[in-house]
Amino acid sequence: MLSNWCRSVSSRGTRIAALIAAILVGLSYFFPLWGYSIYAPQYPEGLYMTIWSDHVGGDVRNVNILNHYVGMKAINDSQFPEFKIAPVALLTFSVLALFLAVVPWLPLFWIWISGFVVGGVVGMWDLARWGYDFGTQLSDYAPIKIPGMHFVPPLLGKKIMLNITSYSYPHVASYMLAGAFLPMLWVAACALPKRHAKVVAVVLVIFGLQGCLFRSSPEPIVYGSDTCSNCQMTISDNRFGGETLLKGGKVSKFDSL
Image (tube, rainbow, N blue to C red; front, side, top):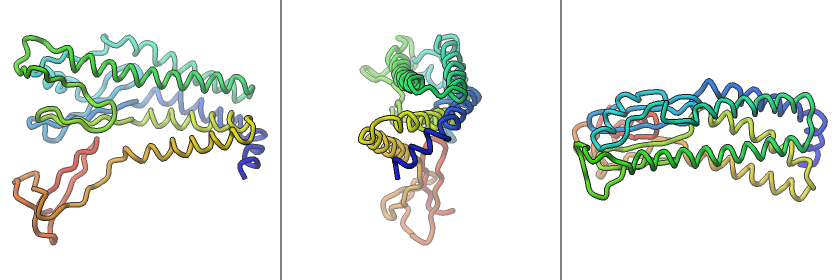
């Protein structure tokens, strides 16, 4: 079945895969790449900040106010030279994929894929580096100072720092870039010897399942143990109860609707 599908791809689907990749990479510029959700007592409904390819969006002003109390630097676009590089990189990958839709030259597919992987790894490393820099280089004049305490946001998932809960997660553009990468990799893999193509197929399946691990979902209410987020009373009657799931994954439970 795999070999039959690969023959189909080599004759018909190669150009379509490249065209899809070109469109998705190009459109990703217009959507956020990464998202942060921050919950604190003074912001119970949460603050939301997004990382785009050329700017930081969302509740940046309020996040800076919150960060000021623990001595973190203010966030502004001028601090990130990457915002000048990323749009050019996206345009380059989009144009190159469009060229492959017209001239499907296999070695260039592998060059595109290799560059895409390197760009993704460098991008994640850079995101982690900036988070570490902002979270560890704290001002000596911060209103709140706790010796040895750092405020490095999570690269992915959830992190609790004092009374602040942070969530970090891929946003729309990241899924679009993944949607551009996978068909390009599949086309290139189909040109490999059969045993190698099967290995790539397994990797793609694992890669796809990996995304399911970070999807936010409701949590069961543990009656007699969980407490109401509003009144702090124990949720004990299984005839009642309610739950909200906010952007980023924060779950709040209540003893009644």
